Structures are given as C-alpha cells and as structure tokens.
Amino acid sequence: MNPKSPPRPYGRLDSFGKRRQMLKVQVLEREIGLLQEELKSLEGLQPSSRSCKELETFVGAKPDPFITTNQEMHKSHRSCIGDGAGPDLV
Image 1 (cartoon, rainbow, N blue to C red):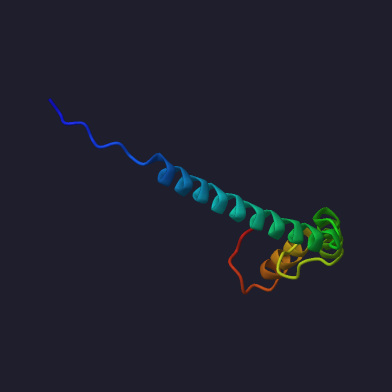
Image 2: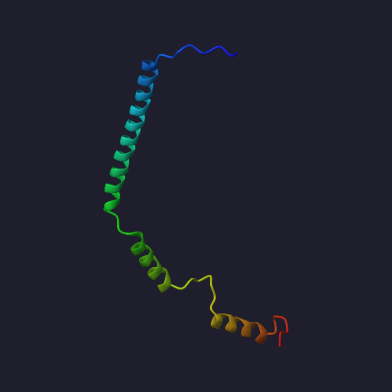
C-alpha cells in the first residue's frame, strides 16, 4: 500500500493561482493597449489596394528596357541574317 501524501494547504496554492491569473490578465491588457495604439497609427494610412493600383499604373506606363517585344526580336533577327555575320538560319 502506498502512503498518502500529506494534505496541502489550499489557501497558499489558491493565492498563487490567483496571482498567476492576475499576471496573465495584466499581460493581456498590455497587449490590448499596444494593439489599440497600432490600430490608431494605421488609421492614417491609405489602403494597400490603392497603393498597389498606383504602382501598377506607374509600372505599366513605362516599358521595361530589359524585356524585348516581338517586334524588336524580329528586327534584331533580320539584322543578324542580313549582315552575313550570324549563322545561316534561312
């Protein structure tokens, strides 16, 4: 038979548990305050969809100099064939 453990003083454990719960509540309240401050700071910003649309319009208006279009490729291909310097592709 196993001996019974001595009875625990419930008052001490209960106050420790209450203190732990109070600390958890304080941490949550602090996090809530920080999140509320962050929300206030974000209210002044414009929506990201508007910024993305402005960026897309700006980028779309200027062609990328590193991407050749089909028309430019045909011109460069003809110049290689016509000058005799390139391989005979015809």
